[in-house]
Image 1 (tube, rainbow, N blue to C red):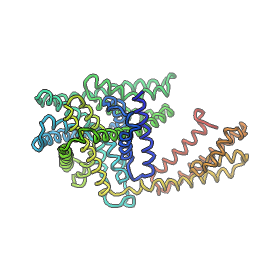
Image 2 (image 1 turned 135 degrees about the horizontal axis):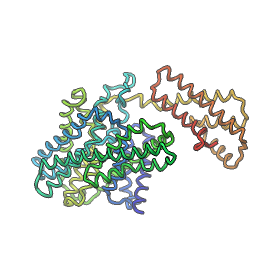
Image 3 (image 1 turned 180 degrees about the vertical axis):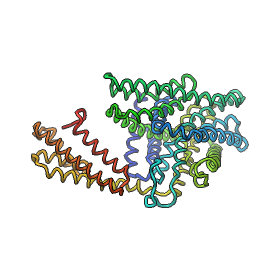
Image 4 (image 1 turned 60 degrees about the horizontal axis):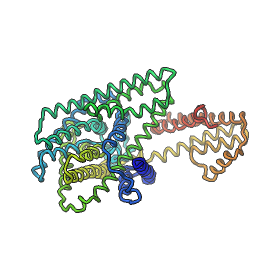
Length: 546
């Protein structure tokens, strides 16, 4: 029951913070998630319902699905084409950074080499979700087909697309490197010995085995799914339920046999991307439901990650260790680790990433934002280190996380141009939608309809632009609830026919607008999809309300 209450409280925090973020769109919702997490932990009314951080629960229920969905948004061909760069950033860069900083820390601070490796290993993984949160509102091409025009940005050159793609791919695969380095550090700490060949073999086994397991299980699920799609026993809801459980199953199985569960779920997501591209029309309802579920869960899980981070930040900074610790060495260690990672990434990017300019290298280095996996790896040490050392590691990693997010946010806001296309998109779409609906209304006015039917159709069309008042809504709701609207079968047919004519006119308007090439095509497609979804509520027997 306590876990249910804790989940309820966290989900409410996610919902409220997302609503507030809508009121202040220039501030990433991530920071509101963090703030509400801190408030929940500080407020006595809710803090008593917050249990201790469960690392295993976090990895299985939150992180594994997130990485699976992230992998599914990435084409496997893109990974194949950039395999060399992925190995470079997720493997070589991570290892070099760990070695360099591990050698530096004991010479600057009073610590052992194993403890230094543990701290650096935890700081190695980067987070694509955190990157998107700090780069929000700044201009960068979001796909290989998108070109930013001079009119759409101001203040300088946009974030290089190649660097952005490489950062995203790096974050998918460097988690495994960090986990293996952490394992090596723990063994070194416990035994006093470091075996390079053994740890290198462990890394290859964990990453290669995880990739193989993820591919094989995803392939098996794909074959079963595709077979069911082509039979009469296919069940949409059961299929989607199994699909949502897939990353959890794969992660648990991979970890049970000693390989990287993170790599396994990422590879499984890549396999699913190819499957979805070539089977999306086999069962459109199933595909549509699945995509909506993925988008919904991705948003919720991302919010939960940062609310949980906020919860733990408050608990850390109000702990007895922090309050009574007058030694600020943990702060200096955290700053040193972050700066060391930043310099290593900068030098690597200067010679290996993008156009090899210092500007691109600097943006790439700052784009290595730390958050989710760093948090999970930190709390996985509970019981492994002595309490004082464990608390010190937590504080060091908190400094790394906060520095990486705040520094990137400040620099990106100063150095990257504003994406005015994205900023002006809501108002531009609102104007287009108004004209679109106006064309549909004009079409209905020309039809010979019963007055009651016409009134209902007009109300429905005006709802597309949210022009109906709350008072008019309650009047309509009261009429429906009290069965005051006496519409017979023939009139309901007329109502559907009128709406179909209106939607057809709206689509025609959008098509004519697209032919002018004055509005970005993705904005036209977005509105076109709205009309099609509205149409499905009129035509689809399983969704129809009239």
